[in-house]
Structures are given as C-alpha cells and as structure tokens.
Image 1 (spheres, helix red, strand yellow):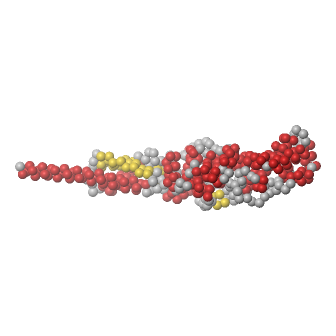
Image 2 (spheres, helix red, strand yellow):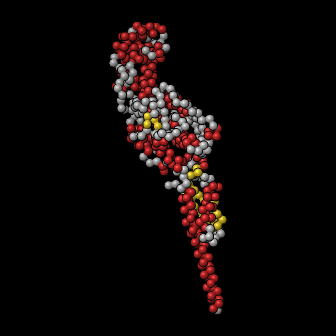
Image 3 (cartoon, rainbow, N blue to C red):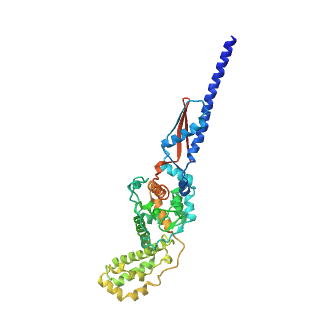
Length: 422
C-alpha cells in the first residue's frame, strides 16, 4: 500500500512537472514572440523615416521567417526542453505599396492639423529657376521600363483643367476657403509641403530627380518639362478667365474698351473689336500675373481696379491686337492713337500688393481637386523615385512593410503574433 501511495504521488509530481513545463514553454513563447515583433519592427528604414517620416522595414515572408527562427533557436536552445517546430511569417496585407497602408503611415508621421500649417506659414525657399517664360533646367525624362512598371500609380490617369482651377480659385478667395479645400487632403498636403519641390519653391537641399514634383502630382507625366509646361498652360487659362471677369466687372474698363472699339471699328464689327481688345488685355495682364507667380509673389484671385497692372496703351500696341484687325481698323488705330491714349486715362502698373495666392497655393488648389486615389498614388511615385535616386536603385514600396504577423508552433500549440507601427 505504501509503495502504491508513493508511486501515485510520484506520478502526480511528474504530471505537475510536465504541465508546468508546458505552461513555462507557452509563457516563454508568448514573451519572446511579443519581443520579436518589436525586434522586426525596429529594423525600419532610416532614410524613409528621415526623408518622409514614414516607418517601414525591408523584407519578405522567407527573410522574416529565417530571422525569427534564428531568434527562436538562440532564445530556446538549452532552456526549453520542448518540441518547437519554428516560426512562420505571413506579411500579407502590410505592404507599404498598398495605398491604405501608405495613408496610415502618413497619418502616423504627420500632424492632424496639416492644412492649417500650410496656410499659416511655410518654411520653403524660393528657387529662382527662371523668369517663368521658359524651362531653363535640364529636363529629365523617366524611360527605364522597370522603374515605370513598378511605380505605384502605374500610369493612373487624371488631372485638373484650367477651368477647374479658375472655379476653385474663386471659391478659395480667402484664407478660410483655401484651408477648407486643403483640409480634405490632410497629411498628404503636409508631406508635399515639407518634402517635395515645385518649379518655384523647395523645402530642402536634398537631391530630387524631378524638378517639378508638385506639377508631376497634377499632370502625371514622366517628362519633367511636360509637367512644367502643362501646369503653366493651366495657370494661364485660369488667370486669363479670371482677368476677363475682372475687366467686365469694372465699368471704367468696359466704357474705355467700347469707346476705343467704336473709334477704330465703326459699325456692327465694333462688337468683335471690343471682344478682341478685352481678350488681349486679359491675356497681357495674365502674362504679368505669371511673371509674379514664378517670382513667388501673390496674385489676387479676382482683381480690383487698383490691383490692375497693365494699361490699354500696351494692349493696343501688342501684336495680338494688330494681327487680328483689318486694314481699315489698323489705319484708324494709328491715326487716333494719341486720342485713344488720352481716352484711356491713367490706367497703369500698380505697386506690389499683398493680397492673393502665390504659386504654391494655386498648385495646392489643383492638387486638392484631384481624386484622392490619383493624388496619393503619385505622391507614392515620387517617394519611390527619390529613394531610388538617393539610396537604393532597386527600391520598391511593395518590398517594405508596416507591420508583422507570424506563428510559433510549440508542443502542438500554435502561438500567433501580430503588430504594426503605432
């Protein structure tokens, strides 16, 4: 009987030891597993973080699994007498190249009040590339098919017309209007402001493959010069339309145009001459506006008479008007030039004004008008392009991850672990 009791007692002790060992193994696996998720996430790319405030690490399922197996072997060897099969990583769903994950990463890296930071002040530097009349920088064109095929946008279409810019500019005539439009873009707007160049301003002295990065977001061409020229055309269309509105809202300008048209083109054709003079005047004023924008000055959305910069004399002397007048009107124009100029009064160039929007803000209006998907994918393009240009020739967002997921099988029990940057 005593032997039976001792045997039973020994069996209970052995069972308790076995259960304890299994609990210890399970507890150790849980502890180590949570630590290993942090270890994997701690290997984030420092260049991505420094340049774009984005946390992501390079890897794939096989590499992370091998890394976890080495952690597992080191941590359990000689310590846990348990049957451990190893780790199995599955990173699916955490790719940085997934727009949803990229947007989450942006929100982690940038403050929620992104739009107000843009409107209330900026730390960008005027670049002084050219006068706005041409493209003076060496144009770069992305032609490498591998680079093109791996871009997150993969040629996604979408842009903003000059007419759309005109409408949005009218809605954003004051700071609150602009703030409301930019707030929808959130962290993307702040990322553009802090990290990317446009033709007029730059945020830093880092190397950028493209000169016109904001313009790329709007136009999406792989030809840097084409992006510049496309945006310049849109700005001209929008400003020209707004200047025409300003002309027809100013009774003195309208009266002057009518009087001049009647003087050089009597009769029914005078209406066509009126339209010609108004359009030429708006175009001439628009050229002055673009000159201001490309020199990082502000241009009012809808000008008051006191903010007008060109006079009627310059309009009548321009080739745009002369080329479209018939011979008789040209002769009358020359005969009555002094009389017409007296009629025009004292409309002349005014001093620099403080009101209005600058080049950055006009472009931000276009960027805010893009679809969320197009805007985000093209920003992702720029990050991938610059990371290739600055650091890694084979950089690909789909090979970087914002989270980790894996399992460890120990003593027939599966332990699952998952974590992401927070």
